Length: 111
Image (tube, rainbow, N blue to C red):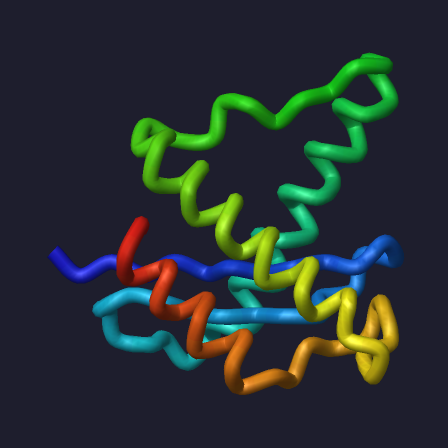
């Protein structure tokens, strides 16, 4: 079965700084707009939850918990390496081809 996933890193200002579409499904013409819509809908849900509780943890992610957890941990390590780069301005788009290649490899491995 052909599947696709969209992985987006969002800055504090709710601006996407990295986007990757991974999977084996054919790309849709309106995929970019659809991903933006889903992203903002998800951010709205998280923001609403943040107002209702003082301790919010996004713990229940998916049924494939171990793979997704490993994916996020390794991408987080890659992101920290980007942040430690003195030439990177936090909040700006991540344009590193090395970062993109690694994220896509991790997605193939874990998702």
